[in-house]
Length: 363
Ligand SMILES: Nc1nc2c(ncn2[C@@H]2O[C@H](COP(=O)(O)OP(=O)(O)OP(=O)(O)O)[C@@H](O)[C@H]2O)c(=O)[nH]1
Ligand SMILES: [Mg+2]
Image (cartoon, rainbow, N blue to C red; front, side, top):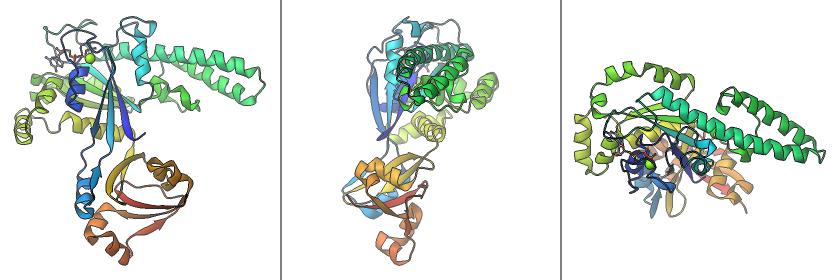
């Protein structure tokens, strides 16, 4: 994973592609027509990072590379998608590989934009999508269970264990409990959809944004659900976000202030995503490139090195580490070394957010 991958899901016509466009500035058609997204659309954005810019200002490399977020926009789901309704299941396959799901829920009430599943009702809509993800997972599990049962005949013990877990997960899913609620020892390649963390985006109207208090009162049940699930909730107006990305920075800021928007949708999604997945950022400054990298909190130095190159992980010797602010304070890595502020860390060092790291390895 060189970037964080996020798959966008939701019912038809809720504003997924509008938001995807705003987030990536890509140009996929956003039309008032259900299922206008018929090919999966993929867009990558670099994560804006002030710390990276400051470090680069000091190091003056030829190239500065931020960590990326990759968005995958898929067609709207409908009731029965997992059974092949609508454009259905085929699209769910496009998001098996993502790290997290961005679930767009419609709250704007525009009679001109047809709504496929009845009235505007976030919790019911979420349930429909959840059900489809659950059904898709059940299908994946059934297939896997069949395969494992066949492999069991080889007499290898691990298949017995795998089958037990698969059956337990299936039973739990059958009761409507998403996989992410449990801690299962599942095969890595299974990639169940309900195992992925969820970032909900409530797509509201301009008026809703102007009366936040009223809005928050109205959606209390949704907020409670999101909290109970350990998910994250983002509130934005996709159409406004799409307008904002077209404006020059200064005008965009003015426009946002007028509308009471404190942070752009992209900033909110990035922050929410990093928090949801509990990711930390570290920096490398070697050679021509100063670069930001994302790893899950608790990642040890050799595995962090392995993100850069698999050889780095295999041949890992040690890491020179300094917090970015300390490095800035010293003025250069050489001076930081002189002052004894650069630490030597070994294989058991968990990378901290904001570390600048120089890996030593032999290949
Ligand atoms: N009024 C209003 N309309 C919106 C908003 N967000 C999206 N729309 C409109 O809703 C229609 C559908 O938006 P899309 O972004 O294409 O929706 P989608 O979820 O990608 O739809 P499918 O790909 O067909 O599932 C378009 O006409 C958008 O302009 C919003 O916040 N307010
Ligand atoms: Mg779309």
